Length: 482
Ligand SMILES: *Cc1c(COP(=O)(O)O)cnc(C)c1O
Image (cartoon, rainbow, N blue to C red; front, side):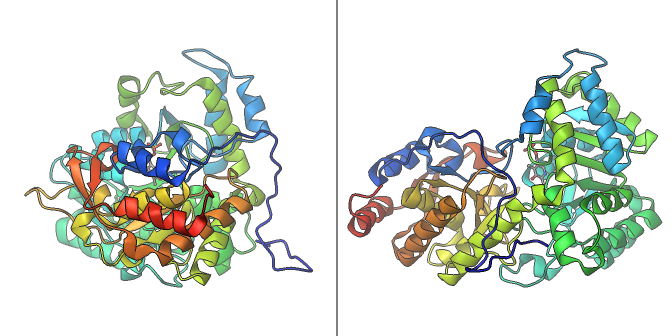
């Protein structure tokens, strides 16, 4: 079901789409890559895209759109208020999730801003299966704190647990008993938990968590930004849903959530976001914030063309053959890297392939940002742009000390339907080479450190001339190859 069988050779993931528009790529020589990463302050967010060969920074807003989406964009109804296009999306949301109220926003974190402003007051505690950078920032800005209630397995980098994104309902029950429901404005479940490697939760787990929330009268908020991968994994990993359609699974998830929000830069392969619910109280609480921060209630900061594309993209997300490409390419990449001894997070999740920097560069201490250093080295080795997901992505402690992350990961995102299998093979080749030469990789130190979300704009420098040495080794091994 999840893979087409091959008769004469080992099966590889097979795309159920064809490519009809292409974009030319450039691969710069290794010496120029060393210069480019220095100019970017060793922060892959600050690299110019023209210096990047395979952009694996994120899956946000860069997934390939379908012909159906592009054609829908042409018929968008452009009006400030009462746009027909908005009604289309509203109806699609109700059809798929069964939620009748929909608030549009310009992207996922805007939903988090609205939720946090409407619900979080100083001293509140927000339980979740795992945090995401932007939600934690918004909750913090409103005086709340995040409490992660995962199982210990969530942080095991190598595991065969199919649902590392599960929340422990007993820990949730315990927390509610300890601090009281009045201090818990909502419980947040994140589909395809981004920061621990795109790991899903099971539908059985969501139901168990929802039951605890219901008993305590606390709303359950589902972050559905990475819902597509979570839907795929429930279907292929959770026995009870093997024969269920993606649409059925999506509805069952929605039926066990009071409020759903999403980044449409991911879910629906477009650019935008939104919040939906059946609770009139929740809707009224959040509604007035939309015109203040986003735009009028029928566009919320989005272009109507994007709104058309989201409506079609959500529909396509309900098609197994549209959502299996990402996770199956990731599984292939993870498998090939594992065969060559490169330490990765297992089981492979959604969103991308996650390299375990704690092990890859175990000689770099956490205060020298091993995952940030590895991300810079990966760019030098192959022009691949990944994202640091480790200590650099954490905020400092109130006393100014480092908050060492549980995991030091480099995420190599695979935007949906963007890369070919030969490009994945190239990435595997360069990563394997880098792993053999990992002793050459050194640490990083901050040169310029922003106070909030420092990983976006911070600038760092290598602690030694290790990047030059890495380039010399590259030349020795690859000759005049790019
Ligand atoms: C990306 C993401 C967000 C934020 O969405 P943006 O559109 O980038 O603002 C929130 N939650 C999760 C799980 C995400 O992956």
